[in-house]
Length: 168
Image (tube, rainbow, N blue to C red):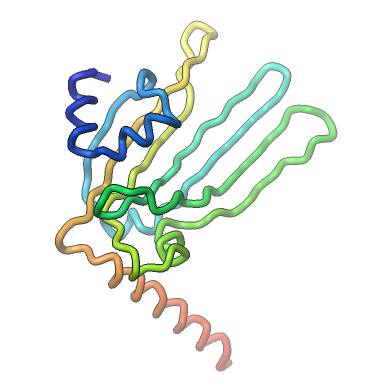
């Protein structure tokens, strides 16, 4: 990634400096900016690990929520899949949560989420050598999207489902 663009992005979004402590930006392919929309709120983080004598792969997507002061609120708990090529080792599959579930868990509407950062990570393999890489997408809240309203809609949907099941 272009170093000048990275420095400009850090000035505009200071939380990137905080992310830099966990992610080596020398391996960052790109940073994009998009608006938060309803589909994004339904997205889930995921982490897939495959290990064995000839392979050790970890790839996935993580989401971080930042408030209007660009302070980290929390990370979305990922769906986790662990596969092993070793004998007698069982696969592990754990369900995480969606972004809207994380916002609910964090106590919205008390917290105003202004930024959701998506980090897609994995490996590039060239000539039998692999290098870490990742891409960042910064989702910024749009004026027409109210996360509190989205959460209320989601809550009402589940309330109606529970009532329907309870009143059979």
